[in-house]
Length: 531
Image: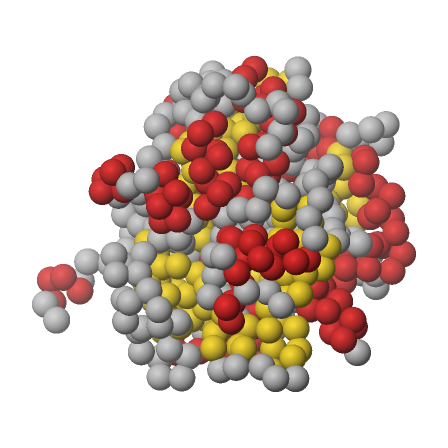
C-alpha cells in the first residue's frame, strides 16, 4: 500500500452521510416555487413542503422522538404521509408505514413487534387503529391526522428544526417495512439511509426521468415506501399528485386534469384501467411513462396499455431490496417485432438497475450461475447497497437470507440468451407434476388471454398418479360466462399437456393491497377441498 494514499483520510469536507432527506433540502432551494404536492384544492411548493417537514420533525422531537425510535403511520396516500418520509428521519426516528388493508390483529402484531413509540393515523382509519390497540401489548402515543382532533396541525406549530437533517451514520435505519404477508406473518425489513438515497438516484437514472415530471401517487406508501418514488421526486423537482381514489375513473381524470407524465402501479391496476369505460378512445399524448411490479404482468395487459399510450416498464424487486432492482429495459431490436412478441419480452424481469451490484440466478444446491438458455431454473440472488440491513429482531432469518454472501430471494427464474432474467415462480409455487416442473406464471399468462378471465392464479393440487397437477383459480369478468371445460380446452391449445390445468375453480381471488395474489390462501383452500 502506498503511504501517500493511505494517509488521506475522510474529513468533513469530503465525506457526508448519504440520506434522501438531503434531496428535500436541495429542492427547497433549487425548486423552491415549483409545485411539490397536489391534493384536491391543495397545492404546495417545495419550499413550503420543506418548511412543513422541518416543523413536523421538531414537533416529533418535542414529543420525545429521538434516534432509533419507531414512528408508525396508518394512513392512505396523502401529503402528510409523504412529509413523514422526511420528517421522521430528520428527527432521528425510524418510519414504519402500516398496510391500511390489514386486519386489526396483524396491525396489533406490527405495533408490538416494531416497538412503536408514536403512531400517526388518518381520521378515517382511527377506528381500525383503536381496534388494533385493544389487542396490542404496546401502547404507543396516538396522533391523529385531520379531523376535529388534528394532532398533525399541532406538530406544524413547532419551530422549524434547526439541527442537521442528516444522520450521524448513513447505515442508520430510516424505515421499517413489513412484508406483504403473502405467506403468513409479515417480517420487519429494515432500510438504511444509504440504500434509500441510492434507490432514489438509481431510479432517476434508469427510468430516465427529466426535470419537473408530474407523478401520480398510486403505489401505496406502505409498500417499499412507494418504491422509493417519494425520495426521488425532490431530486428532479417533480410534482406529486394524489388522485381522489385508485378507481380507473379517478385515475384517468387526474391524468387529464394534471397532465400526469409518470406513475407506478401493479399489473391489476393497469388491467382495470385498460378495461374501463373511462379509458381514452385515442392513445394518450404525450405517452405516459409507467412502471409496474408486484407480479409478472400478463403480456395481454402490456399489449392493451401500449395501445392506450402507456410505455410500461416492468420492474422486479422485493420489500427486502427497497423495491425494484431489475428493469425490463427495452432494446432497439424489439422495435421490429410483432406486438405480441414485444409484449412477451417486456413481461420479463430484465436486467439490474445501476445501483445494484449483482443479480444472479443460481442453482440452490451448487451456488453456481445457471446457463443463459431460458430453460434451467435457479434462484434470483442479489447483492448491493439496496439490500436491507436485515429482519428486525430476527437474526436467524437474516442469516438464512444472506447465506452465501447474497440475498436469496426465494424466486425461481431462468436467464434468457440475451441475459434478461425471467421469473418462473416463487420457489414454493413451482408445481412438480410427474417429475416435470411447471411454472404457474406461464400457465397464468395463458389464462389471462381468455376474454372472460379478469384474474387468474394457478396452484398445485394433489393427484394420486402425478403427485400434483395444476389447478386454475379463475375470477370472471362481470357479465361474462365460461365453464371448466372451456377454460381447460383454451389452455390445452396453447400449452403442453402436462402444463394444462386439470381442474378450474371459479371464485374471487384474494390479493394484497398492491395486487399480489395471496397464493397461500388458495393453496389452503384447495387442500381443504381435497381433505
